[in-house]
Amino acid sequence: MSAWTKRIEIATNVAILCAFVLVAALAAKRLWEPALLRNSNGPPIGANVSLPGVDWSRSNQSLVLALNTGCHFCSESADFYRRLVSSADSKGTRVLAVLPQPISESRAYLEKLGVTITEVVQSPLSAADVSGTPTVLLIDQNGRIRKAWVGKLGLEQEQQVIAGLR
Image (cartoon, rainbow, N blue to C red; front, side, top):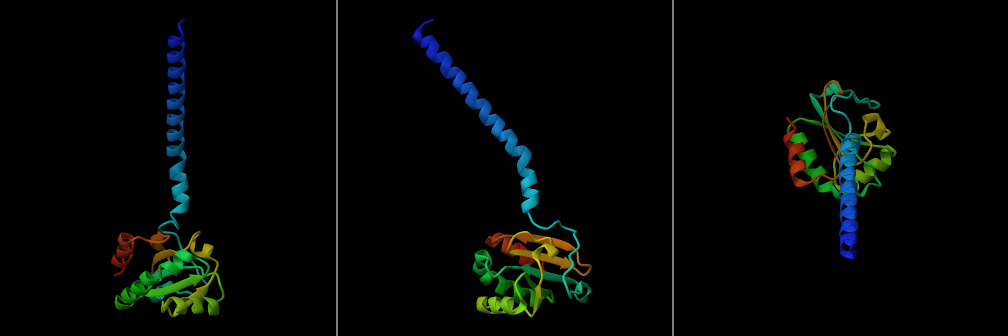
């Protein structure tokens, strides 16, 4: 066998091995990515939310902002929250803020952001099936999640949230 033939054979074997590794990696990503997305997309639609002292039947729908005082995405979204609260108020949608910190600390945080929400609830975020902040939930009068948005939202998602208010 000549030196060139041997080099071509080695190069072909390396190319086949690289192609196999690439195909295996893509297959693994397809298998496991949907499970990861399901876990990170937020609370399941239709799930019941039970927060201390909150009676969902007081309003046809409620907008819940699940925030955390240490969340920089929450702070960066303050302008959106101000617009959202204004829009919700004009459409008669109840707005609540849920934070794990004490109510006095949470109110001071919202005041610093310029976000005026009268109903502030202290609760572990897990009570609302929230695993990351910020999360915006649209909840019906039965306490069921109708829509959920997780993370710092882009302009299109912000418009979806506002459009979801009746």
